[in-house]
Length: 273
Image 1 (spheres, rainbow, N blue to C red):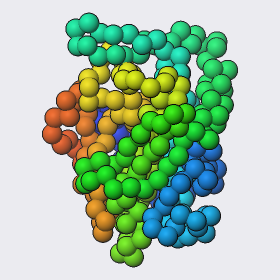
Image 2 (spheres, one colour):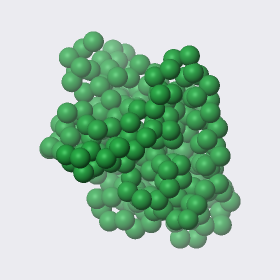
Image 3 (spheres, one colour):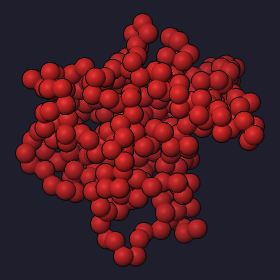
Image 4 (cartoon, rainbow, N blue to C red):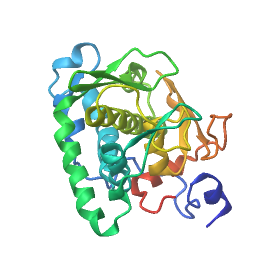
């Protein structure tokens, strides 16, 4: 394993492909039911009634396809076992709730059917999760608001503004499509936890986390091995991406900038740390 990969979770860079292909090249056109068009209750301005024909919906397809793949990969499905079945414990020292690993995570013989059950759970939750764009300010990429029997996900409207700007490039599209996919998966983690466990304070995924290390970040770390952050701009899209290493529990500063080729690599992340 290379020193770079040991430090950040990145694989070694490719030797023959300096730039990644389009983010959805090779991805199946499958869209997870949670991300289906009928669950997007508002797009942007007059797009609300587009029924899948507007340019914004078409431009979101790479993000939605990638989010569907990330959400249904075994690495993600096994992560959801604890969210669905883990016991909540109060840490008397920190005062934080955290989830104990479920016995189902520890039983290899049962893992295959448990993962399949989790896959079905996520499909069953689909009618109860709604997604829209909204004004969240510059620093917030997405937000999940609980409602009786519903989880409402809001994605920062700046992403929609970028896709509608007419000032795009393939590289900017790659970064921004990848970023939207990650935001969607992050917020779906919160929505599923709310629907499965009910209202109240959300528990941390494990005892080692802190109040800034919520379930969305925990799922990102399970998928990629690191936490990645970025800035969002209506003209440039997602930019200034950087890595927060696993030991960066307090979000201390910016680490290595994310290589562009790595975003293409994450489409096939079976070998990730």
